[in-house]
Length: 141
Image 1: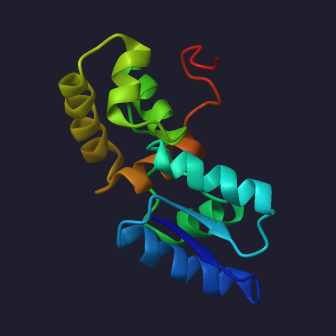
Image 2: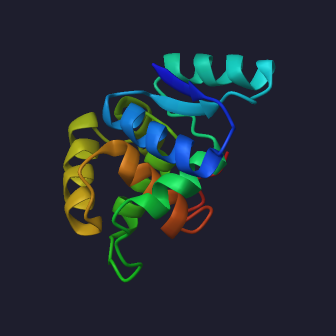
């Protein structure tokens, strides 16, 4: 499910609506003024297990949630896993990309969630986008 909302009084409305939609299980969130081609791409991305999130929504959601400090120390592998979560990859895709088992990805995520102070994958992805370097370990393709 991908949430979608209008752009009137955006900061207040899409901030609240997006958090509710994401907490309810939406796979991503785009705004009403999203171009049709981008909307279709977001729907297809969600169907592939990714989490498309409009940058304006990400900023609002990040500021609206508890923001852990950047001083969190993650291992190199934890940073790699978290960076891929931030790019919207599913656990199976992360495991393939890193050459590890899916269970190992889950173990890393459990540890990461605890360390950065989040309870769900969406919050972890937002944290990764805000706190990790663009390409922490040469993960860009």
